[in-house]
Length: 255
Image (cartoon, rainbow, N blue to C red; front, side, top):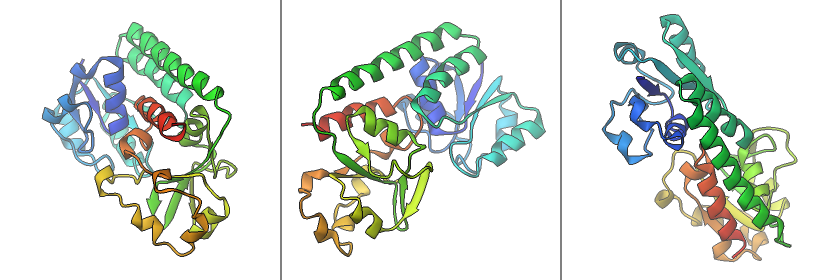
């Protein structure tokens, strides 16, 4: 099988399945596992070079709708008659299901069954630990600083928060992504601020960006170690690596 992945979360799904060796090309932003660095790059995930994809004659393309604008990739695949599946996980259950679906499509159903079982057991293990915690801190997640974007109820980070024994302060907003303002955040009185800016490496994120905001002194109960700078690749991509992020988050908020 010759397989192409058009976004990082699909590439990471393949690794979790143990099928990375089937990949012959990936999008420009796929950066894990390290072994994909030597594969042909097919352009940014919102602007894939479809001529190159077609030239590579893949047996299957793993497309996605996880980011607005990816629809044009799917339309181009349809127009050219390139075999593909479209993954659009919005929850941890969706990710578990996609492990099974993808493995079946690639003719290796046992790989999917095994991976899904491991995923489920690992998630349950953290949930069991978190259930014993008496403190359930309120988490403010920040995807983007200006304007402020944060995950709402219909998002895996609300699930991740709950699984870690915490609560997303915007879990009452019935949206996947919420554009809001700093005053709204202040009024929700978070116990932790979790900075995971999409597309920005952890070392580029600065706590002072938040501390300099008007009214930050109202959060004077927050110690510096309660502003968490987190890897966007472990929290902002709907892939099995969210479990790595969950395990890390649990340790950070319950230490």
